[in-house]
Length: 288
Image (cartoon, rainbow, N blue to C red; front, side, top):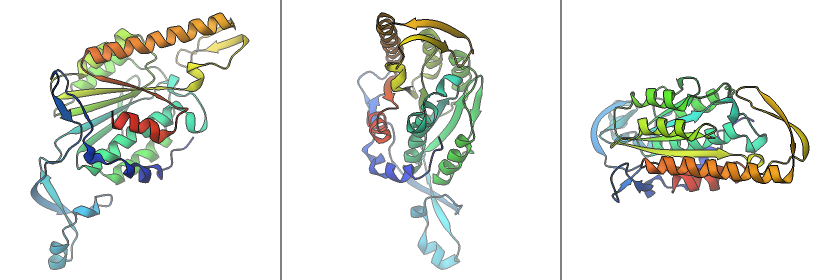
């Protein structure tokens, strides 16, 4: 599947000014906006392709015949860090229900609306290490460039949540929201350790768990060969109804355990199904 940038235009239906609200990490019942304004004019800089044209000062253009945009002090008061799981288990599904592309669009949606609100974003993939893809411009042009990069990537290998997220946490220097997009196919303890490293007073953590319909309800009957895409190990088994019921029960238990561990640290956990319309899933994540 290839991500087409046209979906960004549809995201304008989500008003970023709604100030998506959730409980701040370790702030009790206090509600804090995810994305908000608070703009104070600071200076001008030359316009660059991809900058928001609404920020162009046309009076200054009339005097200088040069395009300048207004910069604001403290308007970029929140940094949104999107971390996209690029391990081999995300390489599952086809067409519009491919986990990696579906999850990427969730993360890109956050970047797009964050830029619309004049806040900063960072976009990285995580696997055996962190791979930052953005260049720090935090505008629509940056999001379009990210789409091109993601379309050239292929999920592979495994992800060590504890090591990778702990290393990333050391790079966060400002009030932030971390959006972790992953299928969470790891031990709950490892995910908890990684989220724990991220979560602190000035950092909110949102875990978006991506699951495919076939994972929740495998269309398998009888003798089957199961393959682990990350370790490439295989196992042959007879997939009976009782085994299918046991599988679903264990998956539900894993989802619940990961959710409980994340929320126990003050974070959020949202489950999205790639079988659902993208915009319905994005609304459930963005609006909370």
